[in-house]
Image 1 (cartoon, rainbow over the protein chains, first blue to last red):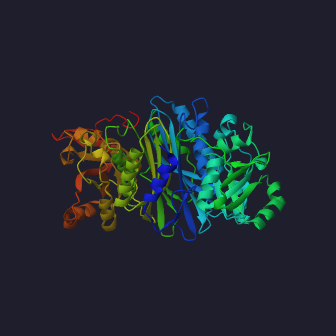
Image 2: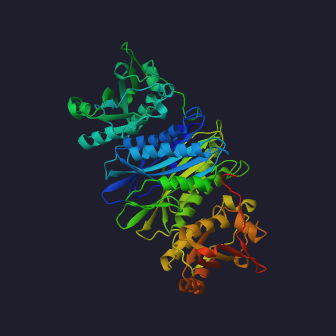
Image 3: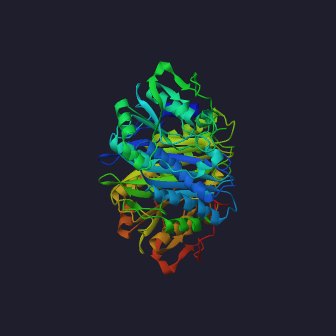
Length: 300
Length: 300
């Protein structure tokens, strides 16, 4: 069972539809509905024992289930709008905890300007929380993974790695404010959120854009719980944004004091190169190596 | 753990949003996006051991997961548009079967005019298939559960009961064609699809419309696998539509030979009465009784 292969197979067979602007394989789908806008669509499922354990707080599961979808809508440069939440719960699961899951979900929806409009509840041996979130973005302005070009600079919105060890993966802040700031003031050529880990998510971006990447280990900030750049590449569930910009635009961003005043961190971590150059990680010692291999988190 | 109570609690706490025309508690949410239309939103989750077993075909699970959502969009009088499918699969689940799930889902999407635009895959001990489906309906034309009035006639689109025994619950045809026919030619006052069982779904409709109902057991057609009217009231997963119409409209429908030529079955099964009259089932022997009690299927 290989997730990537499965998605590729599903994608290759998906029917085409005139209103679908971005289909399967990006952070969220984009469909043209309202005049002047596109609707974004995204779904994510989290499962007990895979994405969280009973040792953590039910409210945090609800937050995480919503926030991870908000992160994807942010990664498209959009605004979250409407959520559907389906919850599978074991027999005799306490009502109090079910409401706590919901409270966490509502906290996240309220914080990021989205509204719950429906969902489903059913029985399940393990707790399952599945969220579908719509978003809205100006027509033609969805920021995909496919727009990076050789010469662009690669940025991260924050330190990476150690999310599972530090507990950040349960109570993270999706980078919606950063995304709003970026798309309203700059031309972002490509963007993705880091959920599977920097290695895998940079690979997604590179494949979709048909480019290579050179990342500098010394430029990747480590989050609490991460000890080495390898951790940052492998751990995943950071929910930071990775984005690319042409160099003049990148320099303008670096020089823009407003971002710092607003409390945003934009770290340049590398550059986009031609596809045949591949994916390279320049170590702290200056050695040129491959990206650290990752295990498949979600089917692990 | 009581599903109804949980949904009521969630609903009472849901934030209001100016664009939400129909929120939590109907077959699907309706949000105003496109000029002249509303977007419908619906999600449903099915879990191994609760909604299907490994003894059935993976392709049928995919069909069922999509078709049950199509049924809800049809119950709103809308057209299905875009689907997100999240699948949780056990370690070592065969790729062939994962693709069969997807093939069944795509069959249903293609048949009913919708397109897959995204989703998520993750690991899960038990198989979980969660589908979110958008739909579209003309502005102000969503058919809710709340419009039934005393004097209206109650119809069903087909025979009921025995769905789990007959296997219909896995390979049913959502009544989209019937819904299209009805909403394009008649004024339908309220509509709901039968998923939880006639007893519970009629109760939902009655509560939302603040009316009572009188149903005639002799008028309820039994599907294969159902032996008594009680089965039809309790079994659930029929995915037929129940709808109400004012009497002149109902008579017009009964007289309309076009419906029969198109192969549609619309059975009048009862009438809408004042709320204080309650929910009554008139037995085949003419005895006036309460609706048969149902177990809670989904948290059973």
